[in-house]
Amino acid sequence: MLSDQSDVDRKGTDTVEGTLLASNLGFPEGPVVMPDGSIVICDGNTGELLRWDGSSMSTFAATGGSPWGALLGSDEAVYVTQGGNVPGSPDQSAVAGIQRVSADGAVEMLATEIGGHALAGPNDLAFGPDGRLWFTDSGTEQDDRFAPGDRAPGRLFVLGPGGAGELVMERPDVYPNGIAFDAQGRMYWTESAAHRVCRLEDGEATTFCQLSDGHVPDGMAFAADGRAFVCTTISGGVTVLSPDGEVLEEISLDEHATNCIFDGPTLYVTATKVAEIHADHRTGSFWRVETDATGPLPLLPGRL
Image (cartoon, rainbow, N blue to C red; front, top):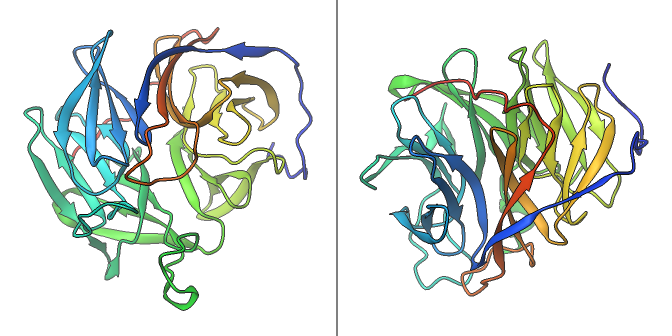
């Protein structure tokens, strides 16, 4: 059942810890397991996709702007939610939208508006059972660069092949962030400002888990057994939820975890000491966590 508690009771007290793989990154997010086993991540402060080869980081592609989320398509291209300009960057020409990055690093902008709505801050993305690309747009309601009357609300969109798409729903004042599908094909997303994980039921938003104020949910990934691993930033790591939306345990990194992905039972996590996107900051990190998950929930395939 769905949980509507103001603060979810923990069913366990075990704390799992991770292994630091890389540091001195900008604002890392969106890890992607590539066909060759390497991991590609976004760096929102440098406008790059970075590639971890098992021992070091290198540049995979220059997207410009502030890439926030990434996803591997069935065409082996990496799809990116481009958030637009980076605060503090001398180059303020980037445009928010959905990008496709080919295996050779070439970058193509696929969409800057959906259904007549200009994209303000695309954040995270996932292919759905219908093969279309579903993504959150966090808007600009928490961005001090914009006057209150000029701020775009949070929204959820879907984009199909050929550029056809639609606004799924508008979510003002909650900052929609991470997004994922479970084994039943149901869509989940996090709402950072509201401290909750939501699920789409019959076209309506329902609360799957209401977290405490000490947890600000960001990206998430499902294990094959139905558990949701949710990066909860100010909690200092990743919060593990049961298939019923109950808090089971905490993965402690002592940093603001931003997003994660499974590769077998191994969970790769991006994090940062300072939960703020700014071109000058280099406090980001990349982690490996060995879990007891029997395997990842395979991501749904798709391409645009």
